[in-house]
Length: 121
Image (cartoon, rainbow, N blue to C red; front, side):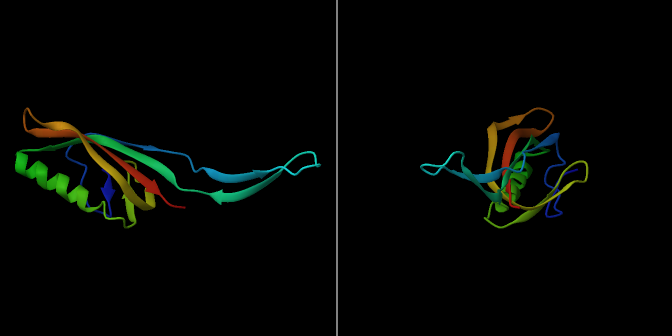
């Protein structure tokens, strides 16, 4: 089960995490009259993590509360995300949280969601 700062927000439905690569920033400079170029390595930059899934609850009000709890973490602060396999991703912040469409009703109430995290090195 995935958690955000050890708070279980995602266990109500299926979910998954896609982890991007750590990009490196480089500056390339050429100089007049010299063959080749100078490449300056500026180091590792932040990477993106995409968390998608489905939130489910017995009542629409419960689902609204769960959505509000997730939105409260989009506060610009750094958090720790742990995925289903126990991997820990420290220093993440929520860049975007969206629900894909309206709340639907079946055996309970549910909606699909996407959260885009940025992990700082």
